[in-house]
Image 1 (cartoon, one colour):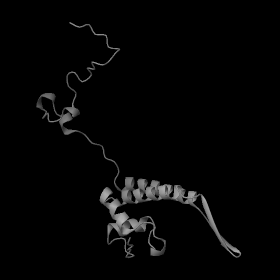
Image 2 (cartoon, helix red, strand yellow):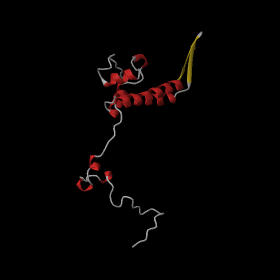
Image 3 (cartoon, one colour):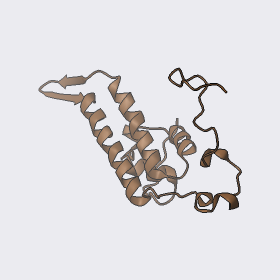
Image 4 (cartoon, one colour):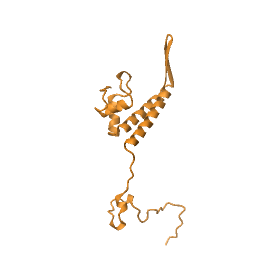
Length: 148
């Protein structure tokens, strides 16, 4: 498992993700290059979605660990709460969702064929238009039609 970070987030998608989730030190690496490459392959070029997926992976990693670990040497003691880390990465994942929405907000979509007269439509897909019999349900027990 390798770890590379050039210090310049503009050079690659992996460096951008490492920068955004603060995985920039080899001594305390959170992800290997191979793991990040997998997430990049899954989510494409959207850095915020990749970073959000990485944070969700870290949440599941920290949730399964013991809640608190502590080590002490002489008078010095260090404790670490994995629940707090999981909560921090949850908040970070939510912030990536908000950032992604700001960078590329959802756009309304209109089916161009729906705006054309019914007689002039090119009917390739019946899922985009109403058609005769759309509400027929032979298994409906409440439908008491008279059979002709």
